[in-house]
Amino acid sequence: MQASPDPPLAPEIAEFLGGSISRPLSVGQINSLINQTLDEALPPAFFVQGEISNFRTYDRGHAFFTLKDNAAELPCVLWKDALARLKFRPKDGLAVIARGAVRLYEPQGKLQLYVETLLPQGAGALELAFRQLCEKLRGEGLFAQERKRPLPRLPEHIAIITSRTGDVLHDVLTTAWRRFPGLSVSLFPVRVQGAQAAPDIIRAIELINAYSQSHPESQKSKIALILLVRGGGSLEDLAAFNDETLARAICASAIPIATGIGHEPDTTIADLVGDLRGPTPTGIAELTIPDVRAIWSELAAKGAILTRDLRRMHTAAENRLALAASRLAHAGAAALRERRGKVDVLARQVERIEPRHAIAQGWRRLEESERRLGAAARLRLSRQADAVKRLAHRLELLSPRADLIRRRDRLDHAAARLTAALQNRLRTSHDRLAATADQLRIVSPTAILDRGFSITTDKEGNILRSAEQVKKGDPITTRLAEGTIHSTVGKARQGLLF
Image 1 (cartoon, rainbow, N blue to C red):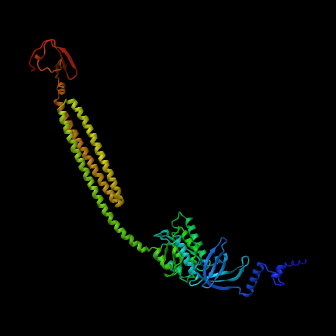
Image 2 (cartoon, rainbow, N blue to C red; image 1 turned 60 degrees about the horizontal axis):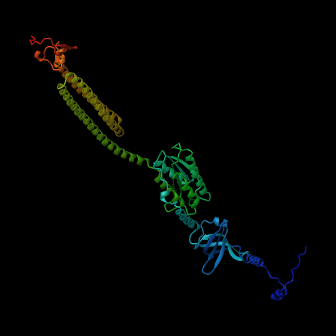
Image 3 (cartoon, one colour; image 1 turned 180 degrees about the vertical axis):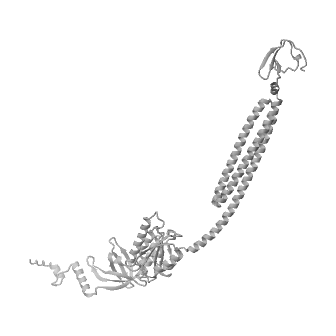
């Protein structure tokens, strides 16, 4: 099919073109022509140095910025993939060297440098990335001391993350088993240099945590501490330990992580987020693994102090026990004296009242006194026994058990002797009261009646001692040992009994 010829130009346009046979080009054609000219005239890539300005990242991940110097400015584009490959974060004011191609963005007619990579000037990319990541993690609080976990003082099982080869593993194991011969150690070998080193270490940390969580019931299987160690090297050699993902994995570990990476001047992100940093791999082993000999010496010293304190407390408890026994004996004697005084008062009161009623009342009071005295004695003994039990329990905690048992037996024997003495005093008082009662019975009117005598009273109840007190026909009452006779006076006559 043959293309149709262009329509003829209008006269005024032809006049404007000055008789030129060429037709006017479109904007797109001009921009395309410029790009074609740039491709033919310029090398495929330039190295351009300048200062970053107006750096912006948009939703799709592409970055746009301007490179400038004292004389001019150049718009730049950094696609998402190229930005992700950088070891540092570009920012305004940073002096860099950019590598890329100069092209015209045809839709807008904008000349731009399409950047393939950037290199910071004055500081290496790794050093700049290290400083920037430090600022970021410090701002999130990952370096804060209060976030870090306390290390176990006496770990029974530790895990070591390091290379299987090299002197580091041998030096750490030698130090660990010299200080703590019974220590259980698990090795998790990883690459400690190169692109795969950081993922290897992260997987090892996750495996150790999963292993410990799957054996919560076994203290011997449970890993209490992780040592992340590596020998010295350049910043490039230690780059894996400055990885942000590794730093966050160390912070997320449920098990404390101590680091010994490189030598004293070397500092990595892993050191800064770890729970404890050592100057060297051997140094972190010295800091985290206890010296058994030093522990034994410390225990011996504390044991001597504890023994001395226990002896002092034992002596003090023994003195308190003796004082309690003395007070108990004194209280018992005082109680006996008080009860004996009350019995004597009761005896005197019995002598002043009607014998039979007094005797019965005296018996009741004696029994009540005996009951109260016994209850008081038992209560006091019970309280003292409780006090003794409390003292015995404290002594059991502070002194050897056999010595406490012997002293408890001595106290029980003393309590038994005191109880026997109290009961003996009660029996003596009881016997004295019984003898007094017998004497009262002998001299009482009732005893006289029992011997054949009688008591005669008039109608008013007055005792008749003479026949002149009544006259014929008066009613009288005669009380015998057994029964009473009511009669009337026939004839009153005074006479002699014998």
